[in-house]
Amino acid sequence: MNTPAHVVLGGVVLGHGAWRRHWLAISGGALAPDAPMLLFYLVERLGRGAPERRIWSELYFDPGWQGLFDVFNSLPLFALLALVAWRLGSSAALAFFAAAALHCLTDLPLHREDAHAHLLPFSDWRFVSPVSYWDPRHGGRLFVALELLGTLAGALVLARRDEPRGWRAVGLVTLACYLGFIAFAVIVWL
Image (cartoon, rainbow, N blue to C red; front, side, top):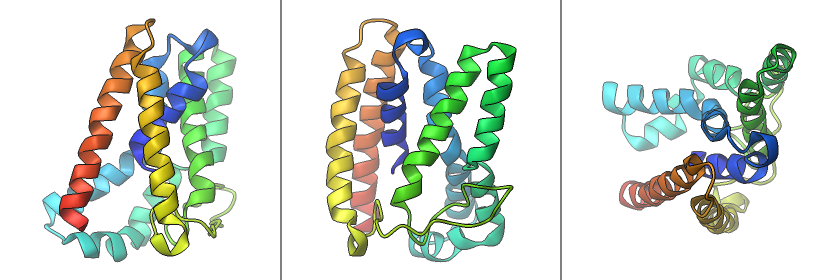
């Protein structure tokens, strides 16, 4: 899934009840697994001037980058950190790690060649899904449409929340980012 979709999903699924006030922690946790991807893109595209095709077909699969991506997508690591947060009584940290784990769990069935080692450090095994969230050869067109509709609907749900106001901002900012990402994708890839 694309990063804005993870933020919206985290808000809709986790941002209610006792965790309703933790809009910032949930949003940050939903972003955390993709943070190295942003760094990767900035380094390779802006720092080194690599072309888009090379970034996503070759450089993405570099073992060094893959190792960093995998650490930030480790379900055992997020489970351990959530346990520590729970033992310390930090509901904000627990919400953060729950959102990060939710991100990883929703990525797991939607990645093919770009799959992560979600069981690191216990295993470097990667679940190569028959479905891809982006590749049209593996259902990507359908999933892109479903993700777009779901993200837009979820962002509108968050934007309509009255309290705390942070959820409204998350919904509106995520909506703007998602629309910006779509414009970027159309300009760069089509």
